[in-house]
Image (tube, rainbow, N blue to C red; front, side, top):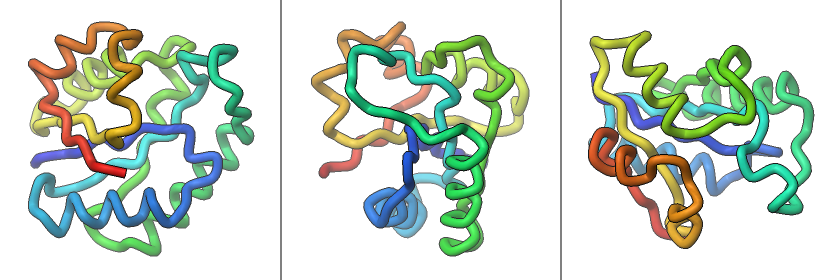
Length: 135
C-alpha cells in the first residue's frame, strides 16, 4: 500500500490539513494518508510555535481522520521515537516497522525554504519521494 506520511505540529489541525489529505487521496497519489503529529519539534526554540500537549493534538488528528473517512488514519509513532523528532528517523522507522508499505513524505510547499536545515533531506528525496502541495 502507498502511504503518504503527513507530519506536522497539528496544533490544532485545520481545514487546510483536511484539504491536503483529501486532495492526495482524490488524486490517487497515495492509498492512505497517515496524519502524524510531531512529539517534539526538531526546530523547537528556532520557530515561535507553541505546541498543545501531544495527547490533545493526537485526539484532534483522530477526530479529523474520522471526519475524512476511509483512507486517512493517525500514527502516534513519534511518541516512542527519540526526541526531538527528525523526519528521516521517523520515515526509516516506519519503513522498517511496515515493510509491506511504500512510504512517501507529504509536505506543504511552505517548508521548501527550510529543507536545507533538515537532517538528510537528500535521502528523504531519494527514498521517500515527497509529495509537495502548494499553499
